[in-house]
Image 1 (cartoon, rainbow, N blue to C red):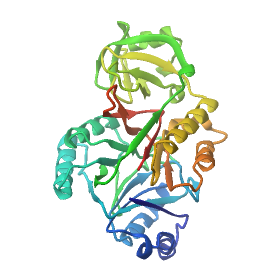
Image 2 (cartoon, rainbow, N blue to C red; image 1 turned 60 degrees about the horizontal axis):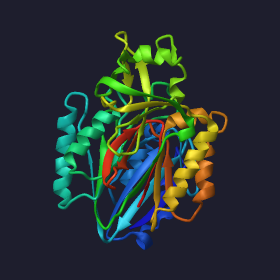
Image 3 (cartoon, rainbow, N blue to C red; image 1 turned 135 degrees about the vertical axis):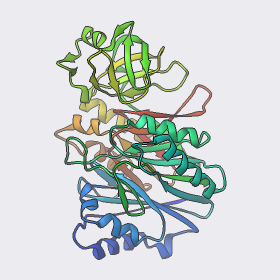
Length: 384
Protein backbone atom coordinates (compact mmCIF):
# COMPACT_ATOMS: atom_id res chain seq x y z
CA UNK A 1 0.00 0.00 0.00
CA UNK A 2 1.12 3.51 -0.80
CA UNK A 3 -0.20 6.46 1.22
CA UNK A 4 -0.29 10.01 -0.08
CA UNK A 5 -1.32 13.30 1.51
CA UNK A 6 -2.67 16.49 0.01
CA UNK A 7 -4.10 19.67 1.51
CA UNK A 8 -5.57 23.04 0.73
CA UNK A 9 -6.46 26.26 2.51
CA UNK A 10 -8.46 27.53 -0.50
CA UNK A 11 -12.04 28.34 0.47
CA UNK A 12 -13.17 30.63 -2.34
CA UNK A 13 -12.14 29.14 -5.68
CA UNK A 14 -13.13 25.49 -6.25
CA UNK A 15 -10.99 25.15 -9.38
CA UNK A 16 -7.91 26.39 -7.53
CA UNK A 17 -8.52 24.00 -4.62
CA UNK A 18 -9.02 21.02 -6.95
CA UNK A 19 -5.91 21.91 -8.94
CA UNK A 20 -3.87 22.21 -5.76
CA UNK A 21 -5.02 18.80 -4.50
CA UNK A 22 -4.53 16.99 -7.81
CA UNK A 23 -1.10 18.51 -8.40
CA UNK A 24 0.07 17.34 -4.99
CA UNK A 25 -1.23 13.81 -5.58
CA UNK A 26 -0.04 13.40 -9.21
CA UNK A 27 -2.35 10.39 -9.56
CA UNK A 28 -1.23 9.53 -13.07
CA UNK A 29 2.22 8.81 -11.68
CA UNK A 30 1.39 7.55 -8.18
CA UNK A 31 -2.01 5.80 -8.19
CA UNK A 32 -2.13 2.02 -8.21
CA UNK A 33 -4.95 -0.35 -9.16
CA UNK A 34 -7.31 0.52 -6.28
CA UNK A 35 -7.56 3.80 -4.40
CA UNK A 36 -9.68 5.46 -1.73
CA UNK A 37 -9.45 8.68 0.24
CA UNK A 38 -10.41 10.10 3.60
CA UNK A 39 -10.60 13.73 4.60
CA UNK A 40 -10.78 15.83 7.72
CA UNK A 41 -11.52 19.52 7.41
CA UNK A 42 -12.97 22.55 9.13
CA UNK A 43 -16.71 23.15 8.79
CA UNK A 44 -15.92 26.13 6.56
CA UNK A 45 -15.20 23.75 3.67
CA UNK A 46 -18.67 22.24 4.08
CA UNK A 47 -20.37 25.63 4.26
CA UNK A 48 -18.50 26.90 1.20
CA UNK A 49 -19.39 23.83 -0.88
CA UNK A 50 -15.72 22.95 -1.29
CA UNK A 51 -16.09 19.42 0.08
CA UNK A 52 -18.52 18.57 -2.68
CA UNK A 53 -16.37 20.20 -5.36
CA UNK A 54 -13.11 18.54 -4.31
CA UNK A 55 -14.59 15.08 -3.77
CA UNK A 56 -16.38 15.31 -7.12
CA UNK A 57 -13.06 15.87 -8.87
CA UNK A 58 -11.41 12.78 -7.37
CA UNK A 59 -11.56 9.46 -9.26
CA UNK A 60 -12.20 7.38 -6.14
CA UNK A 61 -14.50 7.24 -3.12
CA UNK A 62 -13.88 9.63 -0.23
CA UNK A 63 -15.13 9.52 3.35
CA UNK A 64 -14.37 11.72 6.36
CA UNK A 65 -15.61 14.30 8.83
CA UNK A 66 -15.19 17.83 10.12
CA UNK A 67 -12.70 18.45 12.90
CA UNK A 68 -11.46 21.01 15.40
CA UNK A 69 -7.88 21.08 14.08
CA UNK A 70 -5.91 18.82 11.77
CA UNK A 71 -2.48 18.35 10.23
CA UNK A 72 -0.30 16.30 7.93
CA UNK A 73 3.37 16.30 6.94
CA UNK A 74 3.17 19.70 5.28
CA UNK A 75 0.50 21.83 6.94
CA UNK A 76 -1.57 22.25 10.12
CA UNK A 77 -4.39 24.45 11.31
CA UNK A 78 -8.04 24.96 12.17
CA UNK A 79 -8.98 26.15 8.65
CA UNK A 80 -7.50 23.27 6.71
CA UNK A 81 -8.66 20.55 4.32
CA UNK A 82 -6.51 17.40 4.66
CA UNK A 83 -6.86 14.46 2.26
CA UNK A 84 -5.12 11.11 2.67
CA UNK A 85 -5.19 8.61 -0.21
CA UNK A 86 -4.63 4.88 0.20
CA UNK A 87 -3.68 3.18 -3.06
CA UNK A 88 -2.63 -0.44 -3.68
CA UNK A 89 -2.55 -3.25 -6.19
CA UNK A 90 -3.15 -5.89 -3.52
CA UNK A 91 -5.88 -4.27 -1.40
CA UNK A 92 -9.55 -3.65 -2.07
CA UNK A 93 -11.53 -0.71 -0.70
CA UNK A 94 -15.27 -0.30 -0.23
CA UNK A 95 -16.90 2.76 1.33
CA UNK A 96 -20.42 3.23 2.60
CA UNK A 97 -22.64 5.62 4.53
CA UNK A 98 -25.61 4.73 6.69
CA UNK A 99 -29.03 6.28 6.58
CA UNK A 100 -30.06 8.50 9.46
CA UNK A 101 -29.25 6.92 12.82
CA UNK A 102 -32.00 8.77 14.70
CA UNK A 103 -34.86 6.29 14.35
CA UNK A 104 -33.26 2.87 13.81
CA UNK A 105 -29.56 3.03 14.52
CA UNK A 106 -28.87 -0.70 14.49
CA UNK A 107 -30.94 -1.22 11.35
CA UNK A 108 -29.23 1.59 9.47
CA UNK A 109 -25.74 0.43 10.43
CA UNK A 110 -26.57 -3.22 9.72
CA UNK A 111 -27.90 -2.45 6.24
CA UNK A 112 -24.86 -0.35 5.28
CA UNK A 113 -22.36 -2.83 6.72
CA UNK A 114 -23.91 -5.85 5.05
CA UNK A 115 -24.01 -4.10 1.68
CA UNK A 116 -20.37 -3.05 2.06
CA UNK A 117 -19.28 -6.56 3.02
CA UNK A 118 -21.11 -7.97 0.00
CA UNK A 119 -19.47 -5.42 -2.30
CA UNK A 120 -16.04 -6.18 -0.82
CA UNK A 121 -16.54 -9.89 -1.49
CA UNK A 122 -13.93 -11.06 1.01
CA UNK A 123 -13.10 -10.64 4.68
CA UNK A 124 -12.34 -7.10 5.78
CA UNK A 125 -8.95 -6.76 7.46
CA UNK A 126 -9.97 -3.45 9.07
CA UNK A 127 -12.50 -0.63 8.99
CA UNK A 128 -11.98 3.12 9.15
CA UNK A 129 -15.06 4.82 10.58
CA UNK A 130 -16.27 8.42 10.91
CA UNK A 131 -19.05 8.79 13.44
CA UNK A 132 -21.48 11.72 13.77
CA UNK A 133 -21.63 13.74 16.96
CA UNK A 134 -25.22 14.01 18.15
CA UNK A 135 -27.43 12.72 20.95
CA UNK A 136 -26.60 9.05 20.39
CA UNK A 137 -23.22 8.19 21.90
CA UNK A 138 -20.28 6.89 19.91
CA UNK A 139 -20.09 3.70 21.98
CA UNK A 140 -23.55 2.68 20.76
CA UNK A 141 -22.58 3.25 17.14
CA UNK A 142 -19.28 1.40 17.46
CA UNK A 143 -20.98 -1.57 19.12
CA UNK A 144 -23.53 -1.82 16.31
CA UNK A 145 -20.84 -1.63 13.62
CA UNK A 146 -18.61 -4.12 15.43
CA UNK A 147 -21.51 -6.58 15.57
CA UNK A 148 -21.72 -6.57 11.76
CA UNK A 149 -18.03 -6.71 10.84
CA UNK A 150 -17.13 -10.20 12.04
CA UNK A 151 -14.34 -9.11 14.36
CA UNK A 152 -12.55 -6.76 11.96
CA UNK A 153 -10.64 -4.05 13.88
CA UNK A 154 -12.37 -0.66 13.70
CA UNK A 155 -10.33 2.53 13.88
CA UNK A 156 -11.95 5.92 13.70
CA UNK A 157 -13.24 9.14 15.18
CA UNK A 158 -16.33 11.07 16.13
CA UNK A 159 -16.45 14.29 14.15
CA UNK A 160 -16.27 17.70 15.81
CA UNK A 161 -15.89 21.34 14.82
CA UNK A 162 -13.94 24.39 15.92
CA UNK A 163 -16.46 27.17 16.40
CA UNK A 164 -19.58 25.98 18.25
CA UNK A 165 -19.92 24.97 21.90
CA UNK A 166 -22.56 22.37 20.97
CA UNK A 167 -20.55 21.07 17.96
CA UNK A 168 -23.61 21.82 15.84
CA UNK A 169 -21.46 22.29 12.74
CA UNK A 170 -20.13 18.74 12.88
CA UNK A 171 -20.56 16.60 9.77
CA UNK A 172 -19.58 13.21 8.44
CA UNK A 173 -18.75 12.98 4.75
CA UNK A 174 -19.24 10.46 1.94
CA UNK A 175 -18.34 11.30 -1.66
CA UNK A 176 -18.93 15.00 -1.16
CA UNK A 177 -22.26 14.68 0.65
CA UNK A 178 -22.28 15.89 4.25
CA UNK A 179 -24.43 14.48 7.06
CA UNK A 180 -25.32 15.41 10.64
CA UNK A 181 -26.62 11.98 11.69
CA UNK A 182 -25.03 9.34 9.43
CA UNK A 183 -21.94 7.18 9.88
CA UNK A 184 -19.49 6.82 6.98
CA UNK A 185 -16.92 4.05 6.84
CA UNK A 186 -14.35 2.21 4.77
CA UNK A 187 -13.65 -1.52 4.62
CA UNK A 188 -10.19 -2.70 3.56
CA UNK A 189 -9.31 -6.24 2.48
CA UNK A 190 -6.13 -7.81 1.18
CA UNK A 191 -2.53 -7.08 2.06
CA UNK A 192 -2.87 -4.71 5.00
CA UNK A 193 -1.62 -5.22 8.54
CA UNK A 194 -2.87 -2.45 10.83
CA UNK A 195 -1.24 -1.94 14.21
CA UNK A 196 -2.74 0.23 16.92
CA UNK A 197 -1.64 2.38 19.84
CA UNK A 198 -3.91 3.69 22.61
CA UNK A 199 -2.70 6.10 25.30
CA UNK A 200 -4.89 8.10 27.69
CA UNK A 201 -3.11 9.22 30.84
CA UNK A 202 0.12 8.22 32.53
CA UNK A 203 -0.03 5.92 35.52
CA UNK A 204 1.37 8.63 37.78
CA UNK A 205 -1.62 10.81 36.88
CA UNK A 206 -4.09 8.27 38.28
CA UNK A 207 -5.29 8.61 41.87
CA UNK A 208 -4.16 5.71 44.00
CA UNK A 209 -7.71 5.09 45.24
CA UNK A 210 -9.50 2.54 43.12
CA UNK A 211 -13.18 1.65 43.14
CA UNK A 212 -15.52 -0.98 41.72
CA UNK A 213 -18.47 -0.24 39.47
CA UNK A 214 -21.29 -1.99 41.32
CA UNK A 215 -24.25 -0.97 39.14
CA UNK A 216 -24.47 0.30 35.58
CA UNK A 217 -26.54 0.16 32.43
CA UNK A 218 -24.51 0.63 29.27
CA UNK A 219 -23.11 4.17 29.38
CA UNK A 220 -25.11 5.00 32.52
CA UNK A 221 -23.06 4.68 35.70
CA UNK A 222 -25.42 4.05 38.63
CA UNK A 223 -23.28 2.94 41.57
CA UNK A 224 -19.62 2.89 42.57
CA UNK A 225 -18.65 0.95 45.71
CA UNK A 226 -22.42 0.52 46.32
CA UNK A 227 -22.87 4.32 46.49
CA UNK A 228 -24.67 6.35 43.88
CA UNK A 229 -22.24 7.74 41.33
CA UNK A 230 -22.93 11.24 42.61
CA UNK A 231 -22.28 10.28 46.24
CA UNK A 232 -19.06 8.52 45.29
CA UNK A 233 -17.75 11.46 43.26
CA UNK A 234 -18.81 13.83 46.04
CA UNK A 235 -16.82 11.76 48.53
CA UNK A 236 -13.81 12.24 46.25
CA UNK A 237 -14.31 16.01 46.17
CA UNK A 238 -15.22 16.09 42.49
CA UNK A 239 -18.80 17.38 42.49
CA UNK A 240 -19.51 21.01 41.68
CA UNK A 241 -23.17 21.98 41.36
CA UNK A 242 -24.84 19.55 38.97
CA UNK A 243 -21.66 18.22 37.43
CA UNK A 244 -18.08 17.09 37.87
CA UNK A 245 -15.48 19.72 38.72
CA UNK A 246 -13.33 20.26 35.63
CA UNK A 247 -15.06 17.39 33.84
CA UNK A 248 -13.56 18.43 30.49
CA UNK A 249 -10.14 17.45 31.82
CA UNK A 250 -10.90 14.52 34.16
CA UNK A 251 -10.52 11.09 32.54
CA UNK A 252 -12.19 8.21 34.39
CA UNK A 253 -10.15 5.12 33.58
CA UNK A 254 -12.00 1.81 33.45
CA UNK A 255 -10.23 -1.54 33.75
CA UNK A 256 -12.55 -4.25 32.42
CA UNK A 257 -10.57 -6.92 34.27
CA UNK A 258 -10.41 -9.12 31.16
CA UNK A 259 -6.77 -8.54 30.25
CA UNK A 260 -7.46 -5.69 27.82
CA UNK A 261 -5.86 -2.30 28.22
CA UNK A 262 -7.91 0.05 30.45
CA UNK A 263 -9.87 2.75 28.62
CA UNK A 264 -10.59 6.38 29.51
CA UNK A 265 -14.13 7.66 29.86
CA UNK A 266 -15.64 11.13 30.08
CA UNK A 267 -18.54 11.91 32.38
CA UNK A 268 -20.98 14.23 30.65
CA UNK A 269 -23.17 15.02 33.64
CA UNK A 270 -24.94 13.88 36.79
CA UNK A 271 -28.62 12.95 36.76
CA UNK A 272 -31.26 13.71 39.40
CA UNK A 273 -31.27 10.07 40.56
CA UNK A 274 -27.54 10.22 41.33
CA UNK A 275 -26.41 8.33 38.24
CA UNK A 276 -23.84 9.66 35.78
CA UNK A 277 -24.04 9.86 31.98
CA UNK A 278 -20.72 8.64 30.58
CA UNK A 279 -18.96 8.71 27.24
CA UNK A 280 -18.72 4.94 26.97
CA UNK A 281 -19.80 1.65 28.50
CA UNK A 282 -19.11 1.29 32.24
CA UNK A 283 -19.31 -2.48 32.85
CA UNK A 284 -20.35 -3.76 36.26
CA UNK A 285 -17.44 -5.30 38.13
CA UNK A 286 -14.88 -3.11 36.38
CA UNK A 287 -12.31 -1.17 38.36
CA UNK A 288 -12.59 2.61 38.19
CA UNK A 289 -9.68 5.04 38.54
CA UNK A 290 -9.82 8.82 38.53
CA UNK A 291 -7.22 10.43 36.32
CA UNK A 292 -5.88 13.90 35.71
CA UNK A 293 -4.78 15.62 32.52
CA UNK A 294 -2.22 18.39 32.41
CA UNK A 295 -0.06 19.84 29.67
CA UNK A 296 3.04 17.90 30.66
CA UNK A 297 1.23 14.56 30.65
CA UNK A 298 -0.56 15.25 27.37
CA UNK A 299 2.73 15.93 25.64
CA UNK A 300 4.37 12.95 27.30
CA UNK A 301 1.59 10.55 26.23
CA UNK A 302 1.50 12.02 22.71
CA UNK A 303 5.24 11.58 22.27
CA UNK A 304 5.10 8.09 23.76
CA UNK A 305 2.29 7.14 21.36
CA UNK A 306 4.13 8.51 18.35
CA UNK A 307 7.32 6.67 19.29
CA UNK A 308 5.35 3.42 19.59
CA UNK A 309 3.77 4.00 16.19
CA UNK A 310 7.15 4.63 14.60
CA UNK A 311 8.52 1.51 16.30
CA UNK A 312 5.67 -0.75 15.17
CA UNK A 313 7.58 -2.15 12.20
CA UNK A 314 7.20 -1.59 8.46
CA UNK A 315 4.93 1.42 7.94
CA UNK A 316 3.40 3.07 4.89
CA UNK A 317 1.69 5.79 6.91
CA UNK A 318 0.26 6.80 10.28
CA UNK A 319 -3.23 8.02 11.20
CA UNK A 320 -3.83 9.60 14.60
CA UNK A 321 -6.97 10.88 16.31
CA UNK A 322 -6.25 12.62 19.64
CA UNK A 323 -9.24 13.69 21.73
CA UNK A 324 -10.38 17.32 21.55
CA UNK A 325 -10.37 17.35 25.37
CA UNK A 326 -6.60 17.10 25.24
CA UNK A 327 -6.50 20.11 22.93
CA UNK A 328 -8.62 22.10 25.39
CA UNK A 329 -6.19 21.39 28.21
CA UNK A 330 -3.32 22.59 26.03
CA UNK A 331 -5.19 25.94 25.81
CA UNK A 332 -2.29 28.40 25.43
CA UNK A 333 -0.37 26.07 23.09
CA UNK A 334 -3.08 24.20 21.13
CA UNK A 335 -0.65 23.02 18.42
CA UNK A 336 1.70 21.30 20.85
CA UNK A 337 0.66 17.71 20.01
CA UNK A 338 0.89 18.50 16.31
CA UNK A 339 4.33 20.00 16.86
CA UNK A 340 5.33 16.74 18.55
CA UNK A 341 4.23 14.82 15.46
CA UNK A 342 6.17 17.18 13.21
CA UNK A 343 9.27 16.72 15.33
CA UNK A 344 9.08 12.94 15.77
CA UNK A 345 7.67 11.82 12.42
CA UNK A 346 8.55 14.73 10.18
CA UNK A 347 8.67 13.54 6.57
CA UNK A 348 9.77 9.97 7.34
CA UNK A 349 6.37 8.64 6.27
CA UNK A 350 2.99 10.26 5.49
CA UNK A 351 0.86 11.02 8.54
CA UNK A 352 -2.56 12.51 9.20
CA UNK A 353 -3.68 13.90 12.57
CA UNK A 354 -7.18 15.18 13.35
CA UNK A 355 -8.78 16.07 16.67
CA UNK A 356 -11.62 13.82 17.71
CA UNK A 357 -14.93 14.04 19.55
CA UNK A 358 -14.48 10.40 20.64
CA UNK A 359 -12.01 7.73 19.59
CA UNK A 360 -12.52 4.25 18.13
CA UNK A 361 -9.48 2.03 18.45
CA UNK A 362 -8.96 -1.66 19.20
CA UNK A 363 -7.03 -2.76 22.26
CA UNK A 364 -5.12 -6.00 22.67
CA UNK A 365 -6.28 -8.64 25.15
CA UNK A 366 -3.94 -10.88 27.16
CA UNK A 367 -3.66 -13.28 24.21
CA UNK A 368 -2.81 -10.55 21.73
CA UNK A 369 -6.23 -10.52 20.09
CA UNK A 370 -7.81 -7.21 19.10
CA UNK A 371 -10.99 -6.06 20.83
CA UNK A 372 -12.79 -2.96 19.53
CA UNK A 373 -13.21 -0.22 22.14
CA UNK A 374 -14.51 3.35 22.35
CA UNK A 375 -12.40 5.95 24.18
CA UNK A 376 -12.45 9.49 25.55
CA UNK A 377 -9.50 11.78 26.40
CA UNK A 378 -7.24 9.43 24.43
CA UNK A 379 -4.53 9.61 21.79
CA UNK A 380 -5.19 6.75 19.35
CA UNK A 381 -3.03 5.85 16.39
CA UNK A 382 -2.92 3.35 13.54
CA UNK A 383 0.06 2.27 11.46
CA UNK A 384 -0.71 0.90 7.99
